[in-house]
Length: 366
Image (cartoon, rainbow, N blue to C red; front, side, top):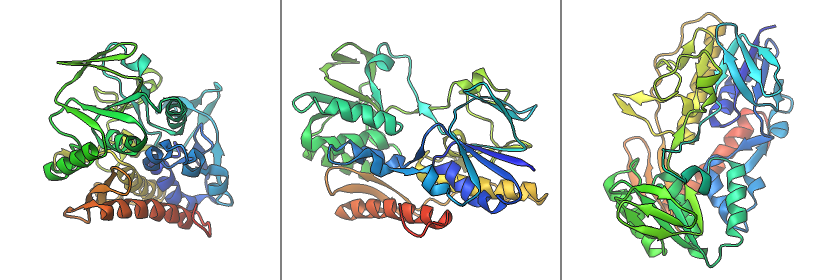
């Protein structure tokens, strides 16, 4: 029996599995992921509030995959041989595959800034959220500095502002490069109104025990949260024979294919449309996972693959302070701001949970 392995149970991996589950009676389908459940990553900044349990933002693989025929192997992949068609697990075991989907996502990117990796807290997964939340228990009267003015950094700053002294640092001249100038300016104004101190146009030079050294200023901190970007897992360079680019990302075709038997979805696939990079979000990962799942199904049947991937994003929404958001919706980008944007973002969370329930045959949302 042919074996299909999907590495990673994030948004891309689950979307691919939802397409592949129709083959579970004919092929062995394995999900390899070291966690116990699907982490709802866009919701994790919300879980930084003390009254919001992190467990509410994780869907158990056991519950999700029950009766689907898909097997969850709770291991970490640490190596891949494309030529010999096997993956290496953290136990040392080699597991062969006939088809492979790489959907394990990204890791936190750390530029070569002295002290940054050692003294900052990233926010990429539920474990990171727990670590930050534990720190915040003792930070009621302390200064929290968030470095990185992208989607995650802005949301974290806005969510923490009502209960903490929050500073947001961004090296670029403005926040939220994925949004238009007007929406980014609105986001900054709302953050400032909520009490966030925003510093723009100064890059981080080094991190000391309780001090950030910027290009022109120094700033005291008690808790430092790093939201400065993502990178591919370093082990892809070290223990695989996969074709990678200079940054360590797989060289994926516009049809999601890396080799004859390996496809890629999620953060590892840097999707370009008309020469522009599409922002790497959970929505893009889910769309790419759907697409790649269909591609594998077609390849298995010996049928022509789908045309090149051109994702149609439904919008981009960011939470700011309590009850307020900003972003755009619908193809063409209708701007939304204020309470309507926040309501739409909350609705998108519920729609995704309903989608999971429907795709995996559950009769209720998670």
